[in-house]
Length: 66
Image 1 (cartoon, rainbow, N blue to C red):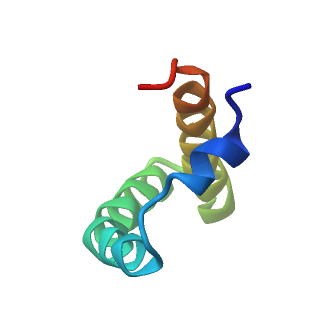
Image 2 (image 1 turned 30 degrees about the vertical axis):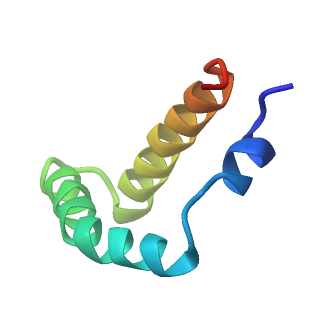
């Protein structure tokens, strides 16, 4: 069965995730800042970013194994 826990087990080592976060964090903060500039609260913007990321993870978990 494909699920998020199986996907999580395939994630790279913690150091790689840390490097990825460092590379992406400023872009995500810019997205949140842009949303705040359009009148959304910081919490709303962050929640939507998290929701989009969650949807993407669920989509990946449904893909057939390779």
